[in-house]
Image (cartoon, rainbow, N blue to C red):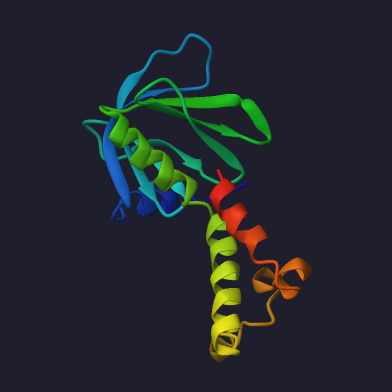
Amino acid sequence: MRYNEKELRALSQQPAELAAELGMRGPKKGSVAKRRLVKLVVNFLFYFRTDEDEPLGALLLERCRVAQEEPGGFSISFVEDPERKYHFECCSQEQCEQWTEALRRASYEYMRRSLIFYRNEIQKMTGKDPLEQFGISEETRFQLSSSLREGQSAGVSSQLDELD
């Protein structure tokens, strides 16, 4: 996927949903953990040297897996390349849990599934499609799957819980 470097830099300066100095180890064998300022902005995880404003890099949090590792640590790996794994060290287990939960909820796919789930719940309660007023109810990305149309919303609920 291609990105405009200038736009990414601008995005990295936006207010973060979560930001902290964490130990970070890249996917290269033998790499050591370095202190990095890590910022979660929308579905990008930016990382910076602690004394610089320009990001060193960014991870797009799509089709990735977030897993808790040793106590106080977590990792991010990608479906297409599971060997490309980034490790993060937090100051506490509580901070680690906060990061893993925020990262799991940051993907577009998680937000899309949440929207579909809540759209279905509102339709059941009111009998009206809440997206109709915005003129987007027929867009493919917002369509309910056939199993949801048959009233099996539990599948999406469990999918929301399982998303990584």
